[in-house]
Structures are given as C-alpha cells and as structure tokens.
Image (cartoon, rainbow, N blue to C red; front, side, top):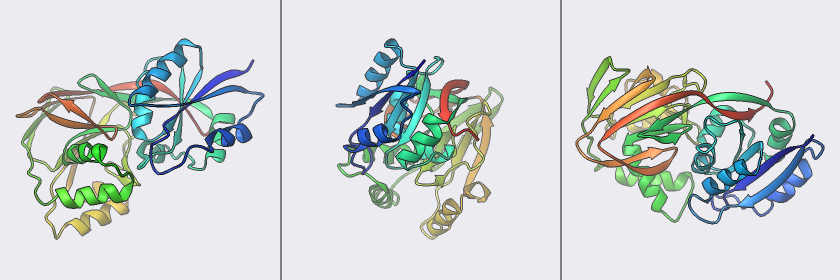
Length: 295
C-alpha cells in the first residue's frame, strides 16, 4: 500500500527559486511507494496550519521545504506524534540539514532519503514552551536574528553585514543560569546558545560535538571577543573547532533556568521570538520521527 507524503514549500526561503521544485519531485520520487502532494505557503505560520491539516488528512510523511524557520513551523506540530518529518534544505543557513548530513541536491535527497531512507527518532526542546529543533539562544545572536527577520535581503552576506554593523556597540547583559537544579553560573556573555544540533548554519558550528539523540542540550556560553580577536574566532568557526577555543564554555544539561533583568527577544531556530526575562529551556528526548539516509 502506498504511503502519503506532502511537501510544504516556503517559496521565499533562501535565494532559491522553487518554481521548478514540482518537476524535481515528479522526476525523482518512487511512485510505487508514494502518493504525493505539493503545497506552497502564502504567509507567516502558514506551514504550521498546513502541517496540522496534513496530520488530520492522514499523511504519514510531511516534508518541510525551506530553511530552519520553515522546519520549525512544520516539525513543532509533529513532536510526540507518529508522523515522520522530511527535511529538504532550501533556506539560508540550513543549520539542521548540515548537522544531519543531508544532501542539498533535491534529486539526490529524494532518492537517498525519501525513496530509500530510514526512520529515526531525534530530540527536540522547548524554550518557555516554544518548541525548537536545532537551537535557541539569547544575547547577540538573538538580536541579529531579529534584525535579519526585518531585512528585505536574505543569505550569508546579510548576516555578515548585520554582525559587522551591530558588533561594536553591543553591550553584554547579565544572566544567571541554573542547570539541572544543581549548577549555577553567573555570567555576562556575548550570547548563550542552547544547542540540540551543532550549528547555526553556513557550516558555523557552535557546538561541534552536539548530538540530536543524546537527551541533552549543549549550553554554550560565548565570551565577546575584542576587535583584534575576531579573526581568531572566525578561524576557529571555519575549522569547526570553536569548542577548543578560550572564547566558549560548553555544559550539558536536560533543563536550564535563565534569569535576566528584562524581557528580550530570543533566537528560536533562527527566528526572533519575544521572551519574558525568566526562561526555562528543556530537552524532549527522542520526541520527533525523521527520515534520513539509511546509513
């Protein structure tokens, strides 16, 4: 009996034109195995609405076609459910897809993952109840996510421009972190990232040893480098060895309480979300079904 799969496509994610996407699916998918439907999102959070309807309509596989924000909109409806997520990276940074080692050529992904892949379970997490799949954060990266969301341009160059513009005048905030009700850290970092997967995107790994199947979040407390140290930090990031530098401390925890002095925006899977000053971040072990390569 054929399985039902729906492709939920964000037409404005990243730089890629999605008009040819239906043809790529038609030419690559195993029609003996799948009946498929393709739908395009039309407004913010439409992917979430389409996912909820797809679950009601009995689709077994739901493919998010876009970036980390699109993946979040789709996947958050599937946490704890029997449906299986498929990721087709068409965004800007594509951090989760890179962490998972997914192919970026659509035809290859369809053949290797959809036609011949294997179902796995991965961890997800929440920040004050808001689900995230890859990472969440507070501080400088959350501010950049906010500015990026408001910018008309997408892509790496826009990120780089915003970081360059905002870095000199950014003032760190004081945070108190309590991990698993036993370890307390007082800090004034550049940013704090709660990493389920290893990277922001663009192959910039904030926690190279992070795993989406270990039942733990990597709590990455990043110190602000001075202007002369920025090239050193960039080198560590490019080498995927930032965890070996003196700029970051990484802890592992299942639950993190964060106390701040004011309400501020947070970065949730690359998207800005307003958060109260007190935050609880929690892992949800093996709570999401996902289709990956069979290896």
